[in-house]
Amino acid sequence: MQKQKRSALLAKTRVALGGLLAALMLSAVFASPAMAGPAWKFNGEELKGTETILGGAEKSGLTAWGFTTTCDNFLYQVEIWNSGGTGQGNVTDLPLFNCYTDTTCTVSAIEAESFPWPATLTSSGGNNYMTVKGVDVWILYGGWFCPLWGVWAHVTGSAGGLLSNATESATFSTSSFKATGSELKALGASVEWNGYFPAEAFETHREQSISAS
View 1 (tube, rainbow, N blue to C red):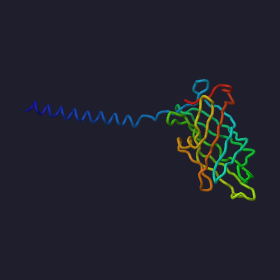
View 2 (view 1 turned 30 degrees about the horizontal axis):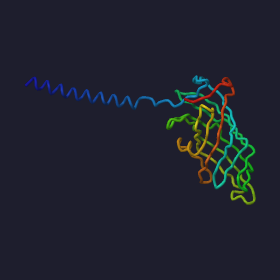
View 3 (view 1 turned 90 degrees about the vertical axis):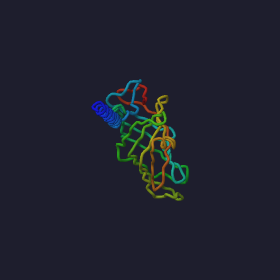
View 4 (view 1 turned 135 degrees about the vertical axis):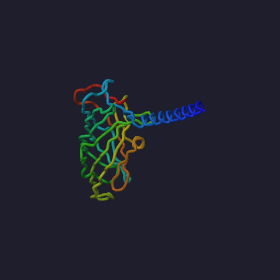
């Protein structure tokens, strides 16, 4: 009789210990930190401290309302750093000049505001992306036959660009927006941003290759 009681007690102890072990393993999974995203690197070495990268777009435009707005001078400045193994940044300047459309609409004024715009590096489907949030651009259209004559279009939202280590660039497109869950809107419509942005360091890592991994 005592032997049976001991066997039952041991069986209950094993079940209790098994449940406790499972609970501990489960809590460890939820308590573990999230995996770090890609980090900024120069010449293959992870960036320590901060750096400023500059560049100008090659063929960049915003498409909405049936036409595309293009700027010949689509420049940018971004302060970058790594935090917890993930690349971070702030877009601090985005001067836009010589802008026009592919219709009768003219661009009377255009201005990017509310800097800085925070940026984060992420990975999706084996590719690395930079997602910029807080985008804030005002565009005033003119032209007698323009349907938006005298209208200020306020472009806001987020923009995700595909990073290429081979060309040291970011490419913004419909597919990169979809991969990063980004969206720009203005006047109740979605705005498509297409652009190819090469990058280079301006401070201590000047002339070094820039990458994200």
